[in-house]
Amino acid sequence: MNGSEPVNKVSPRISVFTDFLPHDKWRKVDEYCRGNTERFQFVGYSDKVGWQEHIHSTDPEIKYQRSFLTENGNNENATRHGDNYKISMHEPVDGDVHKILLWMLIKSRDVIKTIYGNDTYFESGPWLSMASEGDYMALHCDGVFLATEGASTDFSSVYYVNDDYEGGELYVPAIGLSIKPKANSLVIWSHVWHEDMAHGVKPITSGSRFMSQGFFWSV
Image 1: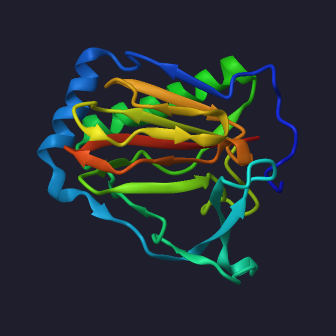
Image 2 (image 1 turned 180 degrees about the vertical axis):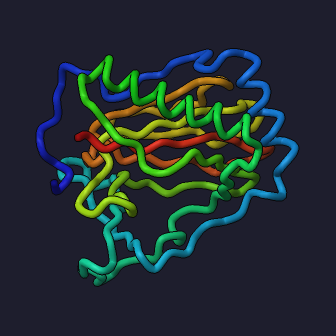
């Protein structure tokens, strides 16, 4: 896929679900994040993944990055994984929080099946991420799976743990979207390899943004 193939215009590109987790489970995840900020670490840089800049085929003002496995070549003019974002991550050590987030991924997989009819696997996880003042993610398309050779992301999800921060909007310029979902909301989007779905996270201007992401491959 080169990112400009036709997409299914009948199914939604992006869906937002509020109150995604039961209130008590959401509160437990929220409290865990706030109480364990020192555990979140920047996970770049990786020698396995590189990024290359692309220009949108119909809107040259939109420049975005696409990932590739460095072992497959195409390293010319590539940037390192980690040069295009500043976000810290953490795999929860609390057993209950881990189970809640795993259930969240399974529920997200079920939502994808209900809306799109696709059976999917999700890559690794569950993980939590934290973006604090000045942190951001540059415009990019989700791409390769590290754990499964030949697989690539078809659907992505972001679970928003909190909303008491400034900045940090999710933006998708090709479709004119910029949103800051409420706490305990889930965002799922399809065709994540397509240039129209290139997305990023604007810099945090105050506070910390906690979330958990998922990447899904159709089988």
